[in-house]
Image 1 (spheres, rainbow, N blue to C red):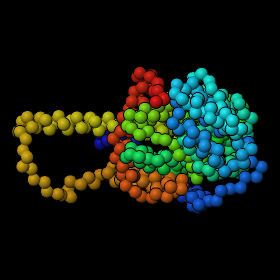
Image 2 (tube, rainbow, N blue to C red; image 1 turned 30 degrees about the horizontal axis):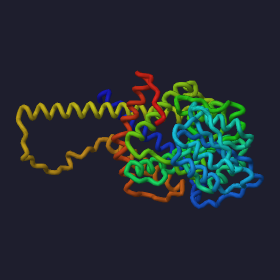
Image 3 (cartoon, rainbow, N blue to C red; image 1 turned 90 degrees about the vertical axis):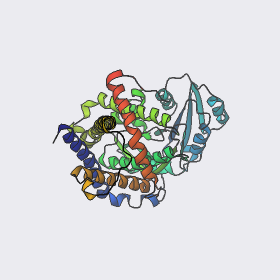
Image 4 (cartoon, helix red, strand yellow; image 1 turned 135 degrees about the vertical axis):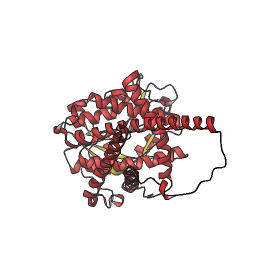
Length: 415
């Protein structure tokens, strides 16, 4: 067996191991999740004061929908405040926010541009709320989401943050439908990581935090333009519990072109690489259990696996093309080719069946995630669409993120 074959078998085995580990976690906690999609909205006694910060930068088309979705939340109006911070927008975002100046539930502020983390931190300084969250100005929250998430804080005083399930809002093209499938799988992964105490990101759309978090470990940092991930790393380092509320739904606008998706994912992967490097002291550190022995290593291994397999594929493709060109130049092109099917040519190597198993496990995670987030779509053809599209384009931004991290040290832009 050659070295490339050994590496291929190793990375595929590790990928299957990660999925099997998550599957075992799923069945271990199945009773807790079985009816989560029909679980009634919990009653909140002595509701804590909640502040939701909406950082805005050139969001003139969507900011109204975002704020209105917050005002429509099923939560006592005297215990909820909305803080909208215009971070130096160059469009009419501030004029749109001025329409809320007479609304006592909405506080609007304008500041010079300093980046999303500065806008959120500015909002934190304006409130004395017990629970503080954020909502990106291109996202919309379901009316029952806040109560479902606050209930987790009240159920367990040790919970320091709660994340929701993200759903692609109103998909219109194949790329967005593929992202919807991806987000369903993400719901499954986050819920399993929640059970393991190993969540590594508190996403900008509607993650909630106890005020204690910012008082004890500080506020958001720029962190390679992935401040929501760095804060989760910092919380894990300080043994702060992060929960995931699968049936609290937030609808977010997703990139509608390959270019926009590429820019977004390049930033995400680059941020993961850099944040993991910054917190490398946590990897395989027994003080941090599943976060250090599962979440971080599996993320690193996934990137290495995709890079290796992609480079191997491109190398084999180039060799194949050169071989065919050589054959054509020698014997010419013969269009009278007869193809007869023979079972002898079917790949029956172990790697083939292991790869099939891996895809089966991925499909299971997608279906389970859709049910956990009350989407209930089950199997549909968009799963195939997701597999095809992401198999082709995901290696591109992964390779670029690794190149930027190791060679150019160039930080990706927000948009």
